[in-house]
Image (cartoon, rainbow over all chains, first blue to last red; front, side):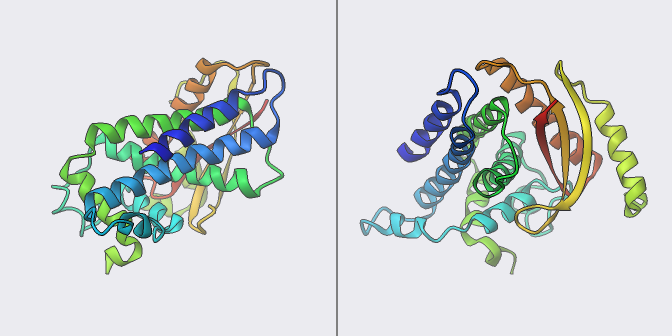
Length: 167
Length: 91
């Protein structure tokens, strides 16, 4: 989990580095790093729980197959007001507040990451960047509460299979 | 949710939900934007104008993070199928 934790720490460092008026470049990188922290946390967990450790390098290779867009769509399905029919029996009809939080925050963080990286017309506030760091921290904490549960395994499988999950 | 097929009715209902959310000091609802998000999916952007302290204020950041969480949760509980994003701009 080292990369995800490092990115989360980096996000906070960047958001708080300037004591006066913060540079937009640092705030944008902070928002982006907060998203990538959660992105890499979920990928690391998915390959850890779903794939064997052998042969060496398998998990690392498989980590490259995850798609930002598809992961976001999976999160949208898990946090929808009405759970999709294919998820109801696997999740016993509901998801925990912790998994809902992870899914909701992933969606939110990915959108801010996109704005931070591409929308040069938007001006970030430091509090806004720190709120993104807080969202990522909250998602890490919530994930740690549920990471060994059945619902998390279902979630990770859906994240790994992406669009093919719903076939 | 049947009535929410009408955009103007939907916006009015959403504003009613948002009006029940306590706001941090110096924050006010500025506007709602119905547009696609970066994935091309229809979404709602809830824009708040906020005052920004001239120094690092972790407490302020926590308030804004909680507001994001609350807006998402309340609108989901209300039955909004769109993803809601909370955006902050300088007051």
